[in-house]
Amino acid sequence: MRYEELTIEGRNAVLEAFRSGKTIDKLFVLDGCQDGPVRSIIREAKKCDTIINYVAKERLDQLSETKKHQGVIAFAAAYEYAQVEDMLKDAEQKKEAPFLILLDNIEDPHNLGAIIRTANLAGAHGVIIPKRRAAGLTATVAKTSAGALNYTPVAKVTNLSKTIRELKERGIWFVCADMDGTAMYQLDLKGPIGLVIGSEGEGVSKLVKETCDFTASIPMAGEIDSLNASVAAGVLAYEIVRQRM
Picture 1 (cartoon, helix red, strand yellow):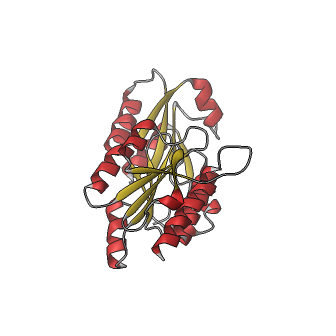
Picture 2: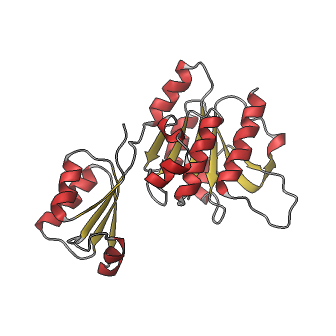
């Protein structure tokens, strides 16, 4: 189900957006504002497990398109999020070993869109992102994915490490991209696999990395030491494809 990407401003509009069931990626609230209508909005946001950011008026003014935000601005997703369980069912129906791509610290919507495109072409059953410090499913992501977002499900989870641990109990192995890891050609990447990619700046967070079964590096011969996150995802995803063939 597709939504129009929407910036929602004003207390009544934001409250109705929550009550109508729209998928809200993020809510920005004026720090210190706790009157009745705002408390109602915050209550609805917590019911939906929406990320709430308490910010200064200057920040709200920057985000506002109408300049009539009344202390609250919500950002609705352009597409509905899937469930991780849906991805596993898809793999089962296709009689394929699950292949998932998990993203940590990917906040650039262009990178997210490009990775979704790669995931689709590489035959991954879905992409998993965390709720915090992650780009949401905006129109920019949809455009950059070149249509792949219509076919490749994206799930948003509260805790990436916890999700990995739960999936490991179901027989999925996890490989984390890390420039200090084992060369990817030396690893067995066949079977049920989850590929974890971090940003080129910060990489995968320590806790998520420690939760993975092994780390994989991409051989590099140049003078710089990192690839764009979406390029790294593509290289490693296609090594998985190669080994599966």
